[in-house]
Length: 209
Ligand SMILES: N[C@@H](CCC(=O)N[C@@H](CS)C(=O)NCC(=O)O)C(=O)O
Image 1 (cartoon, rainbow, N blue to C red):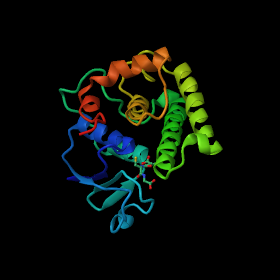
Image 2: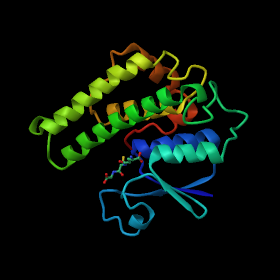
Image 3: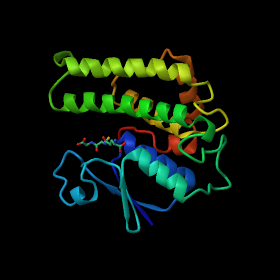
């Protein structure tokens, strides 16, 4: 059985939880509080971050690497999977570099949001730190760039792509943590609307309580 080290509200762990739900893979979830002393968790992920995944003797960390691993190792999807079908890989063969560039851009944007939240928790508001203002500006530029590359059906029409999955986690987490506004971009709004009710997305959406 897979073992996933995660946090209830972590958007990175959520990416993996979504894929696990899509593929209905039996998984033990272990909650890690990254604000506490990592203890033995440092031996699992020296980066002291969640998520990490163990599959037998193999230990992996970094959310998109874990997604790549799961797609590669468990290619089958349940017959009852919703439409559009889950993408079989991180990128489409003919659009490899464009798809990967979208993926790293969503990742960078989420990293900026996480920095803003972590610094707020350390008592530093964006108004006090020029670098955090830059992080917020970076998010807006990334959003504009992504809006130009998205379609109303997502980044790979006909599929629920890993880019769509990443975007859902980032934008719904921005809302949940009140990090920034992203609306007013018709393609991104349409993508969120399109996938919000997908069971793997709805069942993992961050909410208090
Ligand atoms: N690049 C990593 C980022 C993971 C990450 O930053 N996770 C957060 C939780 S949402 C974390 O563990 N933060 C603790 C810390 O940075 O000390 C990934 O994609 O897995």
